[in-house]
Length: 65
Image 1 (cartoon, rainbow, N blue to C red):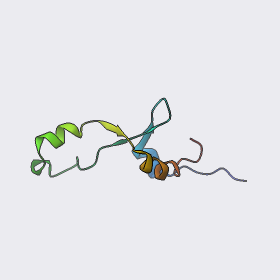
Image 2: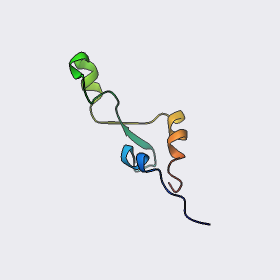
Image 3: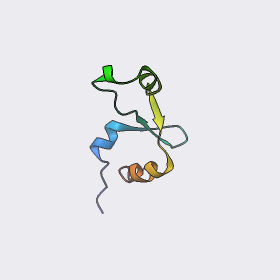
Image 4: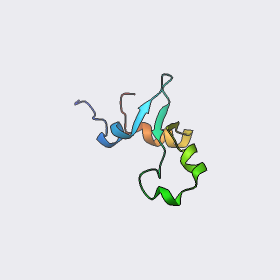
């Protein structure tokens, strides 16, 4: 059987923690930031770990993780 390929879009958007959890970037940080509250921009800084439901969906894009 041929090897399964990882989704290219998922490679760019997700990374893994040392324990195997999936880490992602926070949404709504690209443009129109003048409309967003300062609290939202501050809390959306950096990355976050996906919840269990989203992890099930994202894990399907990584066949060998």
